[in-house]
Image (cartoon, rainbow, N blue to C red; front, side):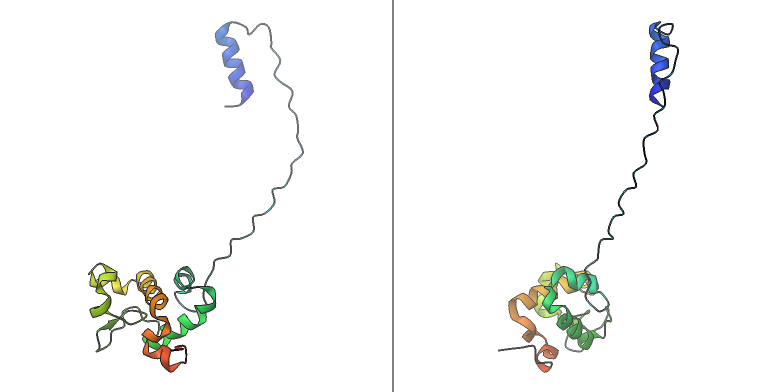
Length: 140
């Protein structure tokens, strides 16, 4: 309800309707255009699942993380190897099951797989992946 309608109802109920019978004058305020919001740029690494890489890896490592993920699994989230490595970053279930809460299906969740890969990377660098050593990312 508009302000004038509410005022009319209040005045009618209180018995003061006879005092004011005119409605308030309408004021035409100038319309000021709202500034357009800048679209929030989504940080994304240059590969599939890049938004998750951007969430967990520092920006200067995005390209390397994408390359390691590409060569490890071919960007296939359900990739498995005969050495018991699973998911996008081919994380070994035997050594890292505790990071997934011992639930094997979580290893195939791209977000969780990339998060655990970033934890492994923070501890061991790219040396934890054979591909990292072959690409020359391991500096030990």
